[in-house]
Length: 460
Image (cartoon, rainbow, N blue to C red):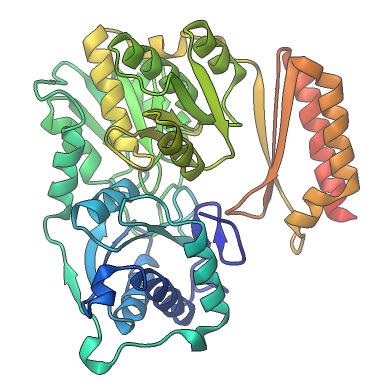
């Protein structure tokens, strides 16, 4: 999704009951989005009611935001199909399956419970962007331009009772019909989030022995010390239970991090490497390469190059990856952080589907999960998230002469033996500094230099 006053790199996100995600503003968001989308639908042009599907994760504030969105959307004539707690990729899939005109997921992904957000999808299950976002933002600034429905055209809300079952069957069709996970012991960490019922059930139905973690949401504990952002917790559990691997999802289950049988983290780059080779071997890799972001390790790029495959890099964000895949005809892509897109099946990152692909691969090759980490030697890399002082303007910090000069100096010192990426977060008050180099000492020195430059610019 485009970045503006309300929309960041992954939809609208903020503190629940804060400046944006308070009920009256969420009603307006529903009205604005509904009006912009409805004008482009055949239903609207022929006097019918457009349809939206709405899912959410397990945050306490989800109830409030769901009700406010429902009010806003019905007030401009939408029929709302309520899915309840469900992963983000399930919302994208059901938007397509139910022929809806709009899909909405209420989530702040990997953020703490106090935050929440709104992600939107087109009828094709692709994240809303471009002209749609710009038009919605304009209406949020000028709500008087939003025409409300006449009394006989106000929408209604219905609950989709079989949403969970529909998604489970969809995910299972992404692997061969005869696949059995019998003999595989897996620890599944659902981050107390949207997949807390679904992920363990899918793996169990396919025969795996499942040990559950992060499956007791209370509205407050989502992502707290568990899930894809805390894989060390999962790693310890895998070793303690003698499991074959661990699967960690984030709050809305669009991200996957794996831990091997030794408790070591297997990130998105390692999974992309394994799946690229696997798909190429079977003649199923499309586009002659893989799509990833600027964050992916140079070691992955070298591994793919040795196989005659290219690595296409995009800006950070799985919607950028998906767009490049769609436009270039690729069927495998993702982010080092674990957003993995298997575009033969899904239009967005899907942690459960990706985990199932990894398990199917390991069953076929009869390999251990640690083999996923042995395909290439990653260059030393570090990502530092630098929290800015209260009141700081992240954009001004990024544009400051001091920081820009420090970036150029780091790039000059590293030359061809490393690279630097400095960017502001689209979802939090952070500047993210990533440095990668052939030599670890050089990498660490540049991280510290850039961290100091960011803080100096913020205090200037």
